[in-house]
Amino acid sequence: MDAMTPARVIRVNGPLVEVTGLAGVAMYDVIELGEHLLPGEVTAIRGDVATVQAYEYTGGLAPGHPARSRGEPLSARLGPQLLGGIFDGLLRPLSGAPAWLEAGHSVTPACGAEFEFMPETTAGATVSEGTSLGSVAVPGGIAYRVLVPPGLSGAVQKVREAGPAPADAVIATVSGTDVRMTSAWPVRRPRPYRRRLAAGPPLQTGQRAVDVLFPVAKGGSCAVPGGFGTGKTVLLQQITKWCDADVIVYVGCGERGNELADMLVELAALSDPRGGGRLAARTVVIANTSNMPMMAREASIYSGAAVAEHFRDMGLDVVVVADSTSRWAEALREFASRNGELPAEEGYPASLSSALAAFYERSGRVQTCGGSEGSVTIIGAVSPAGGDMTEPVTTYTQRFVRGEWTLDRDLAYARHYPAVSWSGSFSRDVTAVAAWHAAAGDAGWADRRGRLTALLAEADRTAALAELMGAAALPPRERAVLVAGRLIREGLLQQSALSPVDASCGTERAAALADAVLLVAGRCVELADSGVPPATIEDLDFSPILRAREEAVTPVEVTTRAQDVLAGLGEPAPAQDGGAP
Image (cartoon, rainbow, N blue to C red; front, side, top):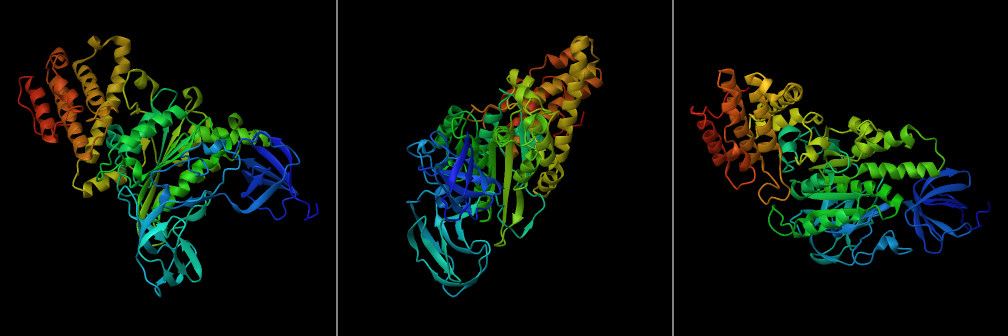
């Protein structure tokens, strides 16, 4: 086709649009479609025809309508205005009118807010990529810094003076290139770093079932698979509210809008435990719910990763919560079907495994280009249809993550929350986390976890026998093990998201509860072995221990309660490190 002929749309099939006449177009270039300039992205080029996935509703778009290339890939505008904001899958702000319903809404909206800037370099200084040019005062106590962008180095020719500056202001000029407070970065391209570091400190989530049994290190990755109604969204929202990360990026990917709206209301009301203010001030919410354009859902995952890497480069610890990756995979499947790709397992495209691997690979604890340490931890929910854990998204995800918190339907229906299955979950970071706890002074962390998992496994095996024979027909030790399993489940692993005391649990309190439960459970098993009648153990009042998790008691008081429970057996309480069962 003649290069002077304007590009035009030749086919529209939902979000799939075919365009001809785009001279010099490249893969992943942003294309503006029709008179309303609907944004899209090139996903395939066959001769003169480019296949574009549209990120807006394509109703009214018809063959013959004009199209033009922006000559750049889909990029996120990264700056201090992200903190405390709510955005769609293309990182457009959702404050005010619903942007996804406005035809031609710009992919790169203007940034009108002003921020207090403080320079950290001077004219004439030599800088390299990742060097801090200055800091910006933002809510939430975040150390936000304007960095020299990747690939740029040289002499600083001028620096903006201290004072208020708009988000798109030029902060400095380095080797003839202006560095602005807000920069653009292609969302599908990982940001560079010097080197990847080994697993370090754990991410403290405030959820005992996770922190005590299946921890994830900062910079790790974890999947949360579970069927409908098992509590995935509530668990992820609890982690969003209470984890010890510097910045939280919450990606609502294809989930129900009312759930996300409720979470935003709760988030706005929460005080930040790190020093006052509002927790929402250091949270970035990317909302692409089920009523929003389908292919923007596919882009939202990459937008979240790009935002996380932006803050990581400042030496911060960032958590990306993606709820849910299954809805993202469904968007890939729908577009692949419209594009005529040969379907693989259950209709998903053959590239699904590679796409999941590339997403989770963007997690990690690294040494940044500026020399500091930062991390991105990715936690992704998986929603298998019908609770089938053998479906492709779940099985592929298990290959690429460092941990898995499987949610059990039976536990959820028994109102045991969070319904994290101790038999179906795993963590590959246990060794690194145990070493960190030992260095921090808690040398008993690994032993405590080992005793808990051993007791839970034995209780599960015994419970299966009890269902066949009846608990009364079991030997004394097995009946005591059933009691021990119940103590661990109800006194430690259960946690109420609605309780002001129990919604989040610190490391010291979790260790005290675990030690108290093990003290009582281990002693019960020992007494059963020594000939104490099982009924005497089963009739013991364990309520002081079971209530401790929801009452504002100190770790010392928790231990005292455990000793008081054992005193009910008429025997002196053993030492704190009582024998393992």
